[in-house]
Length: 149
Image 1 (cartoon, rainbow, N blue to C red):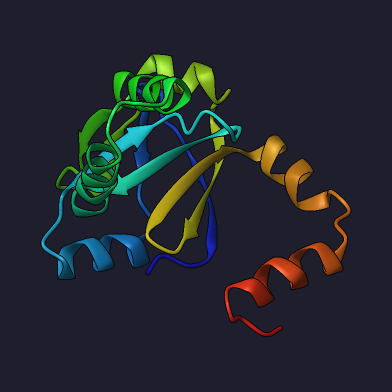
Image 2: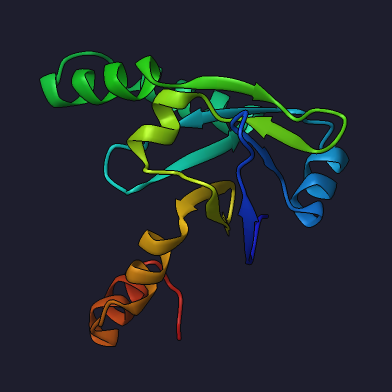
């Protein structure tokens, strides 16, 4: 699982160094391919290890095409999915269209979120973290999942 957050920089060619801790996880899993997507609902880019992305694709396929909103979501998320290989120096290339969509400039924050990695514009991440939240909203949802806080 991916945990923690790290401040990094995107170079002039659009390459981003993956934190060593995350590279080690990928190495243990024998995964060098990440699928980069615009999650549509959040102001970041999400990087899925290939096996996690394949599971998402299987879930999408198993739900069929009967619902219009579902078809639109599957179409949009798949259309903007891009493969990126972790190079020998531990970097991935983030295509310009994804950098633009998430407003990724030089300074970014890389956030581990369980089975995926999120890449945020540093200012947006700071703003997201500073938002006031009602703990009761989270406690109720977590309790539904059997998680006690």
